[in-house]
Length: 441
Image (cartoon, rainbow, N blue to C red; front, side):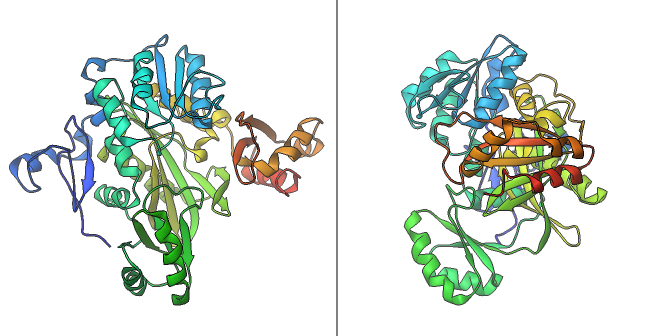
């Protein structure tokens, strides 16, 4: 486990970066414990807007409908942002290297790589405000845009969440638990970390991994050397995490405006298959005190890190109710797709409202729901199902709502869409999903 972090300079306009034992603002010269540092580590109730909110000083006003929102990234999250924002009267332009990207089908598109600075400047020229739809955009480009245009999310939180070690230290700094972990730099340090933390454990790349990629489950000492040999090829720092015995995986999505208002969506209970999200069940089947603590942690993390827009907080819930934060995502999240029909305000509308500094919408749950992902192998049976009326859906009293993302090729294990199954109770929704042929492939 790393050394405890101290929170300093959290109210600065230049944002928060966690490195080498404390969280601070880039360029701040005061060390933790100095008068200036102490003054900055105010409690969360008095926390001011994060780096992105103040970076665009000229934009300290609502960005009203009729304005153009630029999106770094043209995937399905950008597509659904554009759908929701268009209904509010906003225009959209996206930057993505793939022609006819999912978002590009619903917005103007600049076809260029995420590291292309001139293309990013063109995005800025066309936009009144810029957001990003996934973490793997170039943080240097995001920082450049932050200086030259209005990026209310800023680049510091993106920089933090792009690296597991930085992210874990920031989570600890926010007062939340993480699974015991250790930085790994060699086979020898891997062996030492495994001895300290115990096995089973998971070796992960510090950058770039998602949906199970860049991860190796280690159950015995014999697996250490082969895992190291494979992981070393990734060419990035590595972290070993102790396995946590958990009963549920849950997530809470919080939204925060530059002016400070925060709202959370109801926690989702998540089920993964082959390290890819399969189901999100809402209401989550957890005790009320765990639900309240999960929402409190999400609010604390959003405040402490100065998030603007959405931040998804993924957690493990232990048998005793202890919560461990696993990962953060400063954007709309797969486990929040259920909000599109099941909440008064969807996560996508809420993100638009937050980055434009409009009053946040009501997040109340309208209906129990189970979100089921559609992967490439599920597309053919889904399309067959859509041709006919479904007597089982009628019998169970469920209403499946289909969302497809417009991706050109339905590759195996690739996320192609999702279905929100609305029902009087989650058991009926789960029963429909279980009996359906769609997910039996």
